[in-house]
Length: 157
Length: 399
Image: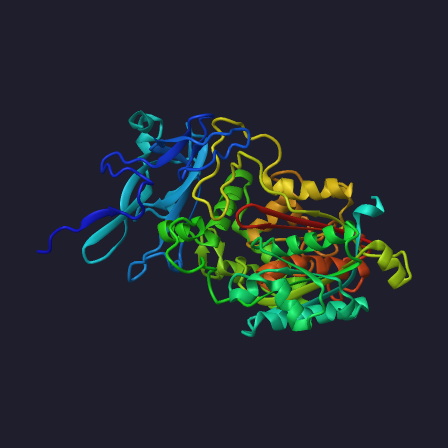
């Protein structure tokens, strides 16, 4: 049996590696409080703010689907596709506290037929691609079970 | 509107769109030659060359203005080259306009051309982990149609648009482009054919997403004074506005190639959306209202996106685009035909040439020279387009 592969983030510093409750790492401007994802590092994008300092902030782990689609054809490089290619869904998700929409793939096995605008989803980590020794992980959105969508899921945020 | 804010269009030219596989400079030269011939202006009399750049054809594409000037034969003309993705052509037109309105030159040539690879547009090569355009492909597999599809699904959810509506846009545009000699696809399609074509990014199908094309477009522009002297007439086609606006913070609609919108947590999003502001700025500059428009050329990267533009350029209120389409208002013969050229649906996208080509079509329409697709009696037209990373593009042309 081959040993388990090492799990590495597909990009450094964009999300926590907490396997049970991961979160996207955005920035918050220490001057005006503006959130941004990916993180701001130089200038606050609020035109009325002169802020140059930012703190990392974990974004809401739950949100509601703003819109969604799928990738029926294999995306070109630099996307690293499995062989054979497996289509996946993509969702743009509204985060209530941050008042922003963040895109991401939807977890494998969930197609557009089981998605609707307004559905509550949770952020998880999942494999984006792998090589012989590593699994590279990225954030993905996972629909909450229907019985949670009445708001119970938010209690975990 | 006052004469000191308008410029004249003396000539328009295009190289037919297709997948010709030749050097982009060839298409640009053909278009420039046609535009100069139509204008009755010699290349050696052009004082300013504005190129719209392509990033897929190496260094000559990055400095397109000089590339075209050298290919036409160095004359010492002043030059500029502009890149703004799909809005590059509007930037080049605006560069020329600024020179003309400032009185720095009398006659300018605007040229854009591209040679494109097959399939999805891809980011520039190399491992560029600080470039959101590279990262969205790498981390999400998000292609351009991904974003078009997010908007399409949103339309269905908010306004009850159907797949049949989206297909009807394609059917209309295919019919519009049948007789256009510069269009790449000149074939009628049925709604059934659209709806049977393979799904690319749900709910958008292959026949509803614009292809990538080779092509070239050019305009000869001048001051009004030069035009009256040169043409001996006051009956000129003029450019009355060029909008090149950027979004306003917070930009709350997800835009290609971003991962997220701005946050509206600290500053509420008020006023028009970015796409609405693109045309609004043009209307304000020209001193006209959407009711004054006889026809429009809008950027139908997807069939569904054309419906968004109806609302964003003020042809109808939000949520009414489907009705406008179903009533035939936007078909040639209707109240305000949209994409009489056939649009991107019939052309495919030759990025730096596209915003210029939209203006060429308006010029021919206003002159009554759009054989087989003429909008009768058209006096005022508007173009609308948007370039990656926040480039608005809208031009108002009148006669």
